[in-house]
Amino acid sequence: MSENNTSAHALLRVLSTHSIDRVFIVPGESYLGILDAMLDFPNIDTVVCRHEGGAGFMAVAAARATKRASVVMTSRGPGASNAAIAIHTAQQDAVPLIMLVGQVPKKNLRRGAFQEIDYQKMYGSIAKWVYEITDPEEMAAATLKAIRIATSGTPGPVVLVVPEDMQQQKVTQPQWKAIEQIPGHPDLEVVEQVATQIKNAKKPLIIAGGSYESKAGRKALRYLAESWQIPVAVSFRRHDIFPTTHDLFAGELGLANTPHQISAFKQSDLILAMGTRLGDITTQGYTFPDSPIPEQTLLHCYPDEQVIGANFSTQYGIVCDPIALANRLAEKAPDKNKKRHLWAKHLRDIYQQDASWPTTHANDGIEFWKVVKSVADYAAEDAIICLDAGTFAAPVYRNFPFRPRQRLVAPLSGAMGYGVPAAIAYALSKPGRQVICMVGDGGFLMNGNEIITAVERNLPILFILSNNNCYASIRINQELEHPGRISGTTLFNPDFLAMAKAFGVQATVVQSEDEINEAISTGLKQKGPAFIEVKSSLNAVLPEPSGGISN
Image (cartoon, rainbow, N blue to C red; front, side, top):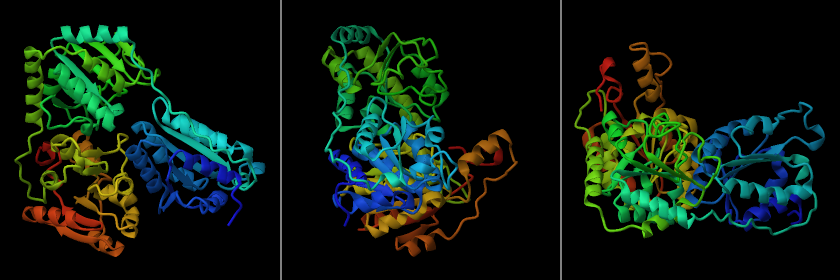
């Protein structure tokens, strides 16, 4: 055992002080000093992964699950390159991620040494901060700053680069803890002004984002909506911050809104954009609200001043805690407005029509929406639904009725390979909760190997794989832009059932509709991981010109 006073110990002591009790790693010789010191921190669970992309995705999902900075450790060069997808996903999803990268020895820096990369140049445009240690005494302070930057303002990724000869020197061992950022509270005069705007508005609309992804946030958002009877549209892939079963839920602003729904949203006269960055997908390509000058009165509240006014001129640009603002505005609400109730019902009716389950039938396999419907019927009241990226997920976003305690975990970045690692991270972070992972055949073969961790730790995750032998999302766009010209989107797949069994997972294959319910029901009863392969229809998701069936 090493002495407990090295620079590596100083780094790990700061992590431990901040309740970071799990790290995701692929080991590498460039950070052996830190790996050695980890033996002296048994309170930190080390999850050994099989690919840096999988390790990074686990860390991203863990940060989202715990609301704390999460750590992925990787070796230099190839390892750091493999993990780059996690940096991008953390930035897009606004979650606090710390990537610790081993580096070549200090004496060899910037000399083109074996596996050397200048990480400031590599990650500078997507990471909030990239810092390379040049003195062992810096280790604790740099780690403290990394946590503070990752968790403040718009949460995001930071990269801490540690040369291999900076990890084992004797240094002081401070037990520092970053003072938690206290987001600004809304000005009382501004609250009064906004309350007056809401009172006078005939058709107000809340666009709610990820800042409400917490128990307090969901409670505040519901309090605001119900107090004023304002319909709520959630930002891209944030379905679970407001129950989709609630009468005031008006839908998601995402990738597949109907013209009828967007036209109805545009009838609003006051938009309360709260806790959202108002990105291009949520705003339908910056057309709702219109950029740069919206037709509606626009309030934009976000705890990061760089976000406010970036793409929209706002009458009320408020840099403060969106949760606090929601609570303050709710306290100012008068009695319910009947006319506003009619406005909310109008939007709700449109949503319910668009979200109704299809009635189509395909002849080339199972329409995956039928599997999603079965999951919705059997899922626990507090189930966590983890999705990879792909067309198979469309019926979850469009049709799944998320109840108050159910959670949606999906990559806002649209990154494939996210689903399996995310499910493992949530099962580790939320023991006792039901975790269901849905993934396509393309995404599964990117990071599906991480399923071995679910076997090793006996995690009760139900993995459902949609196999249509295609990169279907790309194929759809290919058919729309180049009808009938298929290139590079067909997949030759392995025997997924045999793969799952080889990993040690209870597995079955579903080939007909009458097998769906039993497979889902049985899979959810397993004490450890379970796997279902669904022979799903491709024609069901392809656009009409190619002979497909429209959903």
